[in-house]
Each structure stands twice: as structure tokens, then as C-alpha cells.
View 1 (cartoon, one colour):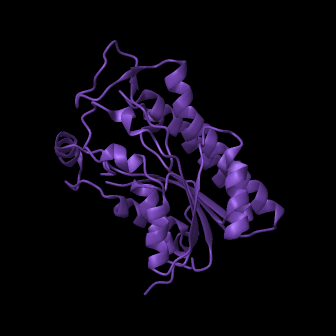
View 2: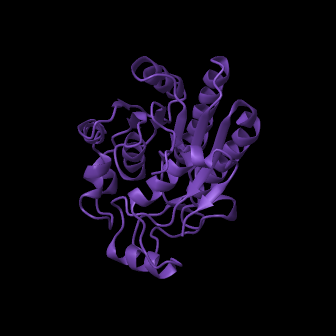
Length: 273
């Protein structure tokens, strides 16, 4: 068995109460990583009347306690902290909490998103019947506050503490979709992810001399609870491998990028098919 060299490391995983974040926290913990799971409960009424599976709102409204308990039941170490990443003071508080309960953060997984669907067109629904908002200040700011600004501040806090303590090993891993090529009907989401990609690529260059790698994972359509039969059919038809990804599939790639085996992989956007 290949040793990923992760035993005893500490990770901070955002958006870890469900989906890819929860799967990543479990996967890292299974390899000996102590994880701080951050999350924000969302009002299930936000998706009232939308064509999502009935349980989707409940999943997004849950804490990360059940994920942390799964990790502990399996013999791992995990702590939870609810925090709104749209608040610019939160990154420092998350690192303080991790250091107080688990130790210095060595792996940062920027998974959380302020996702919403918006458009430049005078339409109110996308092809799956989901609500589209106009691109305006409110929709822009909600998206960028989490996906771009919070990710940048988390990376900056990671870098400051890493260099201050003289550390020589670190991993920054972000999740992206859309990016610089544009993302019709999810315009601000794609733009914010493009910004996050750029921050992460800059981190790869500036922090490489300090032993830090920084990469992004670009998953295919992943069933984190929101996928309807119509979305699944379209996703499978568009996939070169004709499949719908699951959170554990993405978590495997995140874990690989954190591992010793990926020590010379940095500044990359890993596209999953």
C-alpha cells in the first residue's frame, strides 16, 4: 500500500457539512489527517419551489456534526465550526480555532461556495426550470464574497502563519467550475471561480519556495444532492466517460493532491472527466 504521508497533518475544509467538502474531510481523516470542518447552515426555504430533490434543502441546512461523528467513529479526529465566509474576519478565526484544537493548519481545502445562478439575459429560468437572477450588485457580491474574497483571505492567512512558524510543508487545494472561459447562466459563479483560480495559481508561485503546493480541482457534474433526473441525463450524455460523479470521486483527487506522491504537482487545474 502506498503511504500518502498524511498521518498527523491538520486540514481546514470549508463547506464540509455535505457534498464534496464532507467527502474530502472523511477521505483526509481516513489517512490520518485531523480536520476542522467549517460550514454555514442555509435556509431551506431558499430553494422552495425550485426543481431540486426534496432533501436538498435539508442537507444544506444541516450542521457538520454528523460528518465529524462519522470521522470519530472511524477512529479519526475532527472538530466543527459554523462560520459565514462572507464575513472578512472569519478566516483568522478559523485558523485560531484549528490551532487551538488540532494544531497549525497544513492543508487548506477551499470548497465552500456562495453559489447562485445569474444571467445577462432577460429570462427568469434556465433549461432545467431553475430560477435565474439578473447580474446585479447583490448577486455579484454574494458570489464573490465567498468564492473569491474568502478564498483569497484564507490563502493569505494560511501563508502568513506558515511562513511565520517556519513551516516547510503545505497544501492548498481549491474547487472550481466555469473559470475564464465563461459560464452562461452561472455568470458570477464562473467569474468568481476564475478569480479563485488566479489566487491559487499565484499562491503556487509565491509559496513554492516555502514547501507549499497549490492546485485546483475542476470536477464534472457531481451529485451533491441537487441533481435531478433531467440534470443527470444531460450530465451523463456530456461526459466522455458517460457517468455522473459522486463526492467521493472528487475527494480522491483532493486527497491525491494533498499526498506525498503529488509533492511536485503545483499550479495546476486538474480537470476530471
